[in-house]
Length: 288
Image (cartoon, rainbow, N blue to C red; front, side, top):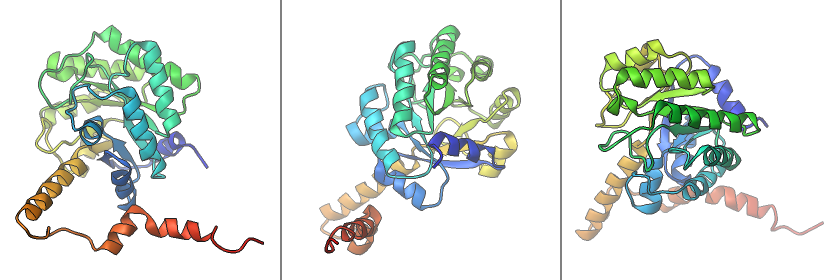
């Protein structure tokens, strides 16, 4: 069987834009695969919320993210992208992070140029490192890949918010020259800015579709026309799950049953009981 990275490379060669939902745990990743998507994305924002109940402000650690990622990758067969934040330190830390994400089963790691501790790209208070430091991070990641980490590298810049669009585009072009497989210019604020980025930078590019965020939410066909290869929806599942849980809790507090509840057989099926029972039955018969 080919590696997750090899499968992702093959998927990226196909024509058309890829829609990539975000997950925060093994169950949400399984639902992405069940729904027929080819790829998924482990969002640091979503994992920080799910695992710690804390905002995406650099509070979650490498160890917590890679452990969550290992469980997520084991739950599915589709290639997954993993949010690697800033790489968690200097060049040697970044190389270890890249290798750790590859070992966990990710097909691609996203690394960004924010000052640590980082923040969600659609919130206030961001700052980015110098262009030289940003280049060093991607060079270290590319070196880790060359030294055996079977994983793609997606290089992200948040410079649009602090240094302007031209600097953000220049960084993406630099990342490609250094060997990044995919670039991601975070939080352009208009379709014109999105077009400027896509026309100036070659190679696969990702659009971040955060509901009510800084970037316009555009249909997939329009994003493809602009020049994007991937449209990620990193927070949609977290968003709707929080809304559903709040609604259910409100119903219970009011003494009524929540509206959106699966029957127990459907719930058992969703979490994998039928497969477990079938596997268990293989070992329950008489030995020969």
